[in-house]
Image (cartoon, rainbow, N blue to C red; front, side, top):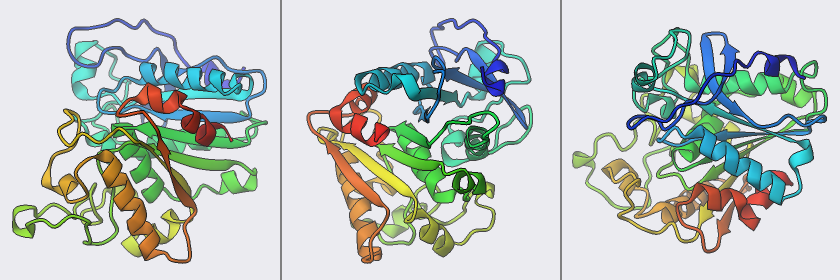
Length: 316
């Protein structure tokens, strides 16, 4: 058993009427505190780690189970470990009477890389950094060949922004580990300049270019990187935009309908296509990214993960 898996403390998971449906049963000790985490069965030889990031509902166990089903359908369970971190907020901690050592964030600030409010300040993206760093440690994971980070809906927003802001981790290259990001059906994307595909009234939407929609007011985690530096690194990273062809409802209840998001398109499929086209126009030399559409699937995390297209981008 890997050392860091032994550090997981198993606790009860009880449903409540309000707040997050369930607290993930594991605890991963990070520098700033304990991260709630769900983890699948550990294969004897782990060659791939699939990190699944939940959305606004913080239902990490739901996504973990769907990811495990996808691995099984693809015939990859024997070599794939699924990890599902859970970004709890303060209301979750209060509702479940969790100990002070458990990391928590204010509201949805974890989605944009915000700092935890307790027990110590830690960017949600820095938490992902620590997880990736541990997986790339050959002493703990001697056989890992690739790390795949998947996020759907709000989780897709997290993965897209994390891929954009994260600094390269030398251990990945040194150990020959491939890192791939799969961004599925997010409500919005972070643009690198003030161009947007849809006309809007700038005077009535002054925050359209602020983080997490643009490059103004970047979070502390960005570490002083300029938009030009961020874009140069981002387009070299392996990012796959996985979009449901039926995610086309402009009135979907979970769709971001703020002016900042609506300037990017009417619905998720359109917003994803517009963003990918935007990158291609800015980089005619090409990008290390591609867009994959999933026929017959709308805004459904399980449907995206277990689709034939989803399996192909997760497990190749």
